[in-house]
Image (tube, rainbow, N blue to C red):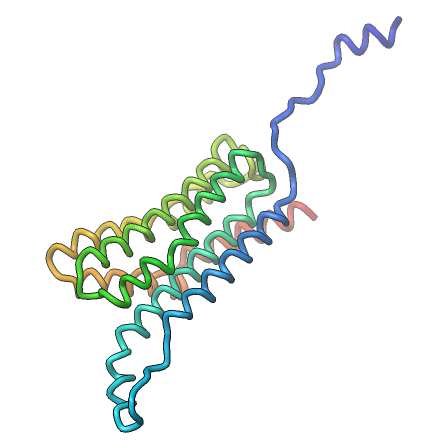
Length: 225
C-alpha cells in the first residue's frame, strides 16, 4: 500500500525524445564528404593534346584547377565547421537527424555547381548557382546549430551562451559573403570570384575567436572529467 502511494507521488523523469551519442551520424557525415570530394576530383581531366601543346593546355586549365581547389577548400571548411559543432552537440533526435540530412543533401550537390563554375566560369548564372549552393549549405549548418542549442536542447546544459552566439556568427559569415558574391556578380564576375577566395582565406587563417572556441571545449572536457 505504501509503495503504491509513493509511486503516485513520484514524478517520472521527463522524456526529451533525444538520444545520446552521435557516432553513427558522424560516420555518415564523414562518408558523404569523402565521396563528394572524390567526385569533385573527376572534374580534373588530363588534356588530350599533342605533346608540343601540353604546356598551353595546362595553362588554359588554370581556372579549372583554381575552381577545383577553392571548392575543395570550401568543402573542407564545412566539414571542419560541422566537426567542431559536434564537439558541443551531445545528443540527437529525429528532427536533428533530418536537419543533418538536409545539410548533406546540399553539400552532396556541390560537384554540380562546381562543374558549372569550371566549364562556364564566365557566365553569371554559373557563378550565381555556385554561390547560392554554398550559401544554402552554410544556412543549413547554422540551422542545425540553432536547433541543437536552442533552449540547450541537444548540447550541454551549462554551455556558455557566448559560445552559442560565437558559433552562429562564425557559421553565418560564409553565407553572408556568398550572398554578397551574388550581388557582386551583377557588377563583375571577377569581383564575385574574389569573394570565394576571401571566404576560404578567412576560415583557414587562425582567428582570435577560434581561441575562445577551443578554450571553451577544453573547459567542458575538464568539467566532464
